[in-house]
Length: 250
Image (cartoon, rainbow, N blue to C red; front, side):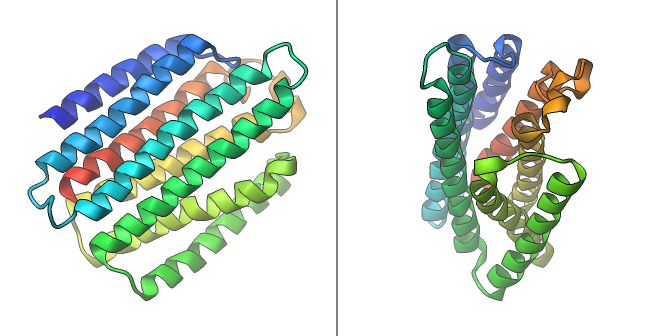
């Protein structure tokens, strides 16, 4: 089936990307990452075409595909952030920061679309409120641990990071609530995808916001080590491809 072919190609391009990607990134790495991200969009589009109820679920499915497109935008901008930061020109730092804000915004809007699509497919109600409250609690716990235990330094990115984390944990809680109410293949895929998304972003936040001395460590514990880079991207692409495959069953 076409969806699974695109999925397989996506992980092939992801593997090639991981070969070229280091802590400074490169144009080559950005190109391979872009192609890998195009593959999860293609996976979702093919999944919609094969969905037996595509007429009935067309709108929520399209919203999810739009969320994946925004994921691609976020992918490119966040890797360009790393690349620009290492270039020797005066505004490199400012341009890198702009890419960070744009990447967060792209992913944040993408999660809003995922939440709306899930609600349209499985129903809105008080569960929206309950899961939002849950998201606030989880987000608070994450940032208390990150700031006071891990000693992470969010600086000017603290507010957008909290806002983004709220959307991400809301998507996790909301998809989990839907699965608890009624089992379906799509719900399982969305829950696992949402959880993998949060794992990926927790790793990414360590890469961006760890305390200064952590970056001086040798080996895998360095936030910018190859292991951290590969783990971050592997969990992220698993998340996006699970969401993309869910379009086939939504």
